[in-house]
Length: 355
Ligand SMILES: NC(=O)C1=CN([C@@H]2O[C@H](COP(=O)(O)OP(=O)(O)OC[C@H]3O[C@@H](n4cnc5c(N)ncnc54)[C@H](O)[C@@H]3O)[C@@H](O)[C@H]2O)C=CC1
Ligand SMILES: CC(C)CC(=O)C(=O)O
Ligand SMILES: [Mg+2]
Image 1 (cartoon, helix red, strand yellow):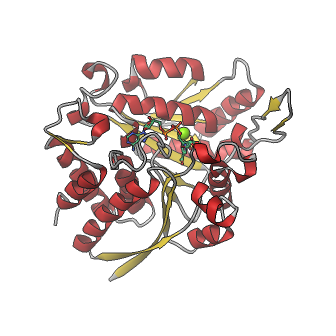
Image 2: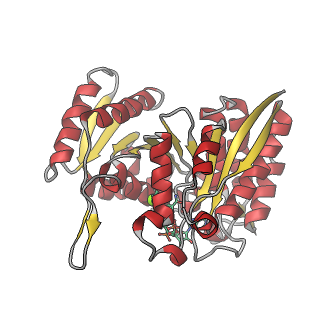
């Protein structure tokens, strides 16, 4: 029987609660699909800092590199917000992504038919939305030098090299070829020099994909268009910060940030992670929506382990749970037949996995 090594990084806040549910569902699907999964827990974030003094211990990097894939929950929380930057949980996550080299963060935003009433927008605007944000993940303003602060000034730098833009643009065009063959590249080329290079470089890469229609949009307009008419988008190609922001916005098309998964790829080992954070405001209450993480586990099966059938089983089980009217608290007002806890939702989805 095939066996895969999965590195689990639960992290802080709701991280452990949502990862536990994803593991429940993964174990169910593995048992019916002829493979087994071995898990190794690795520390990252505030919990890692508390134990080791470092938000990203070296063993976490080597453990991840020794695995077939990483399933990641979330890190961060107020307790660690006033530490020096390099000690903060978020620095650990940024360093982790950089160390692994996962430069492409794929963030699908799909609206489930069962949840069209849950969106912040009218059902006719969101029904059928199926877009993919392809976000550059290890460059841009989160990483650029110089950065720093003193008493009166703080500074960060948005830098992209041509090579960084070329590789993320290829990812976007390749993904577009498997979908609606449209890429909208998001920038701020009317103001930022780095965005002018971004736009020119994306144009060059586009010549290798003549079947794909390329358009460009300024990020401020994109934020508005995503709400006005989200179905105009197929693949949205973005830099790091723009994709971070626009994908949280896109989650409101689907009804909750607790629904959106992601895959961070481009290197030997990928990281599969919900788009949301550690949600300290609801941590420990058993009310977080685990679907974003369960769906990220499905992306892991599909992209990292090539277990496409098993991934489809998870996606179908999620749809079944939603169509049967099960909702966690974040979606309780929207056509819920039964409101359930984080762990009940995990069990329901695990039970709906096709044998
Ligand atoms: N990938 C990661 O680990 C990320 C970590 N963070 C960190 O997380 C902490 C909290 O950040 P916030 O800005 O509050 O963003 P957040 O995404 O953690 O939470 C924003 C809002 O969405 C809700 N929410 C998030 N996930 C949910 C889920 N699965 N089910 C139901 N509701 C959910 C939260 O309760 C909160 O009201 C910070 O320390 C931040 O730096 C933020 C984003 C990403
Ligand atoms: C917490 C940050 C490091 C990143 C973030 O918000 C994200 O990747 O969605
Ligand atoms: Mg974010």
